Length: 421
Image (cartoon, rainbow, N blue to C red; front, side, top):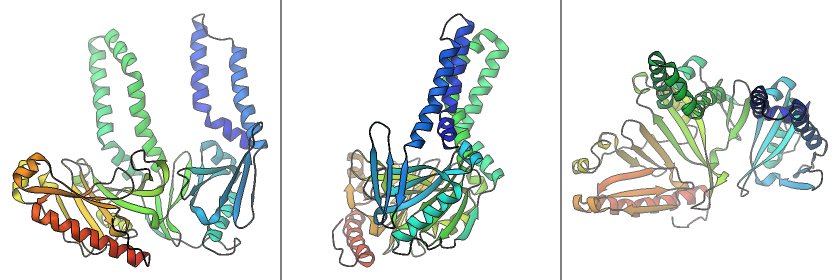
């Protein structure tokens, strides 16, 4: 069964290749059908070989994975360095009731994979790895979880429809329709020229709906558990201790409905940050939700009940006339909250214990207006928690105050930690 799954991963590309060569043969070009069959067989054989040469074992402290035919690749994953274990089922794997384990390891900047196990066996191994990671007997069953929210399919569909990319796609299709009514030849020429771009837009819209369908969130001792997927399914865990920041995004088309979207930035996983050298990745915590649901989900990560948001001085309008109405920021002893955006309003929460540096920046126009921006930096490059265009006296005070509070927050979390940001 596993070889079928591995071959199925390349099914779309293989089907496109066979269709392309079939069209070429109709015009007297391209390869012979025997060559096409040989390519398809090679894909399947490679999947069989990879499956046959893969071995794994778990001794309670380390997961051993060996693979490779000519060059053996041996990996050892200590449970002490495991951050999370996700269970992934592509479409073919779902039909065959097998699954892949994606293991996030601290400091490696990548995910280790083990594919494919029977679905129940994958769940059992995941529970054993996480139990051993927390110092428990590997035979300890997975702890129960508390359901928090489920995103209805209809709401998800409307949220995808009410996005800029979908609106742009619809506008292009309407324009092509108008061109076709005037001249079919011109219409076909435009479709041919824009085919790749249109395919990218359609694929992006479909991928978002497919990957986030059935999105459910639950709280468990090991973090926030997320299950999602229409054709394939993913069961992943977001460790709260790895969250560097959380963002709430309010697209302009969603505002009349009161919908919001939540993202989290995790440190130590995913791709390496080329500039800063620290690994980070952005994950969806809630694709779409009403204010009360968003607040309940956000409360699992940060508590901002003591934060009072304030706006920059009125003279900052000269620098940011389009976004001034959204600019606000505030903090307490635990978290920084910043609101930015012109049409799309973005609110960012940064736990002070995660702050790596505090910067005061002042451009030429800001110097003329006697304002400055204070940036709060954490791991990654996409986080924007900033006190924008504040009075210079307030900015100077914030730099010292936030640095002191971040040291204190780290000391409460990690006793003895006194490193300045």
